[in-house]
Image (cartoon, rainbow, N blue to C red; front, side):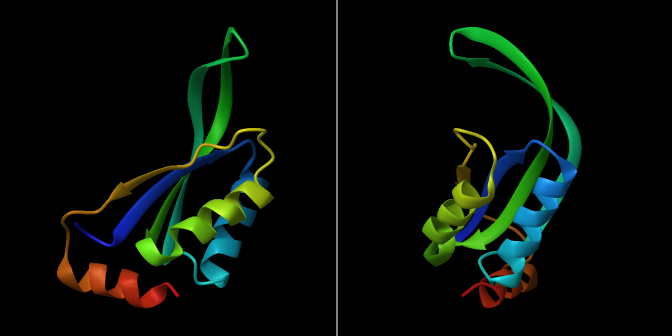
Length: 105
């Protein structure tokens, strides 16, 4: 199984998304964070169907940093229950994956 990880989270504003992204990269918890602006989310919260404009963050990290990424996201994210879903990256360009793992401490 790959040690390279893609984690997804959302933020409620562009500023919050940028703060999370820059902090994760500066702390070397992520090699790269893509911010996808203004995704429309529909979800159930406290018994009601809600919708919101959110910013989706695609965080490229390494397994050894995953718990620290989750903790940092929870500290910086304004949501009561921030999304924190991760996937193993099972394929890709070998040079990119090597760069990813070398960029994360």
